[in-house]
Image (cartoon, rainbow, N blue to C red; front, side, top):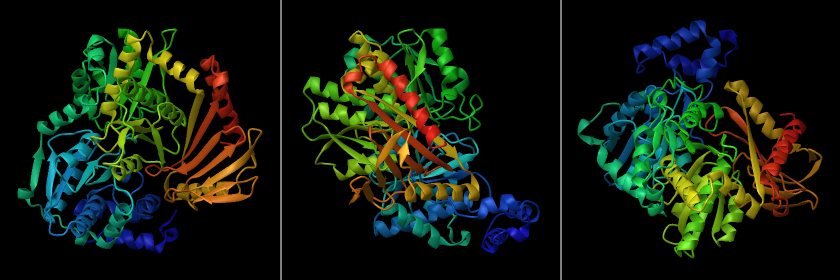
Length: 579
């Protein structure tokens, strides 16, 4: 590619970064791209980072499409402007936290500088902390907003910026769109206020840690059983991230003493030196922890992502082999345990509810129905679960919720997925199962026998850069306008198009409205009830395919065999869709 092939608007934007107020390092880097790296120039400037389901997230570097002090500064200036409009004549407070990513303290410092320069009191954690603790701190410190510097489980070249509102949940409409408008209105780095006011910046220390751990401990439903089974062998790894101290502290507060660490992965590092990707959804990220379990004989493995809002687990099957659970299976164990315990103890509120996303297993619906608990389905992204909690606050009691992507919450003390409480409650579920003569694996098989076998699969296809974004858009257009008539030999009988709010019953040729906000999601349903969901990721250059299959209760006598059959069916569906 030559410079002549670059869109003139891209080149105009790039050239503006070679002038004041951009610093010397930034100017030199952009000049280098203009003169010698046109392809890199296009990737760095063809668009601007925007808020998706997880906020602002991108590769670190120079340009409007990269995470740097100026994109972070503009986002913060836009947020500051919106906060001042939303809370006029109030003392505005914002909490700020960061994880182990490269440039984390730099970006947190930029955030504090800009907020304080705008007259906003800024409360910054004194060291790295988990995302859920940031959510907790917002409410604890009565802040109007919060910012978490993290790229969650993305590779090491990424960083990100999650924005929270005063309820402790991530931005939802209309606030997310309004903040984007304010960021766009900033227009230029020249309009960012960088002149820090130190008197408005306040450190957050161990007091919030202690309050957070106390709030976690209050969610326990069987503290006596935890102590009885305190020797339960648990291998825990933070995969180089923020849970390195707090997760073991919380597990011990719950009564578990036999916590086995993976020393190599207790090293806090944005390079994530022991893994290709710090994502607990990927089997490779748990390999070292599973090896430690084999050496120690531990019964349970838990691994959290860098900002500690997701957790992956492994447990022993009847043959003693450590196997991985997917996010839907872990969610089923947690929700089943919580609802059953409340029911047995007589503490199940009449107005109780759980929340799940539209791509999370419908097994949760069956479990909730058994205990007379309402289920709310929301769009993908935990911010919508937090929104459901807020909208029902004071009227209904939230017991728990989760999403297939390994994020769960028990109780409403925070308003984001929380891997720390998830670790504690998974361990507690294991202790309860042990007390009742079962392993966690056997408990999961019992759940399948009671409710039917469900199995879900996920395929993510990465499409990077400008060309990739165009390919994803075309893929979504084809599914929307020309859906397959059949999949793996079964007729497609229903299409749900969330972008256009249409629920189409194909055979009946009737359509109804979908009672959720618009979103770029397509769901296809076959005759047997199989569900295939297609959606672009809100935080990564990917298009995701979710496969959800179910076998009836009558066929669940041998769930392990049924699970394998369902896995094979998903493979056939992928082949039929040419994925």
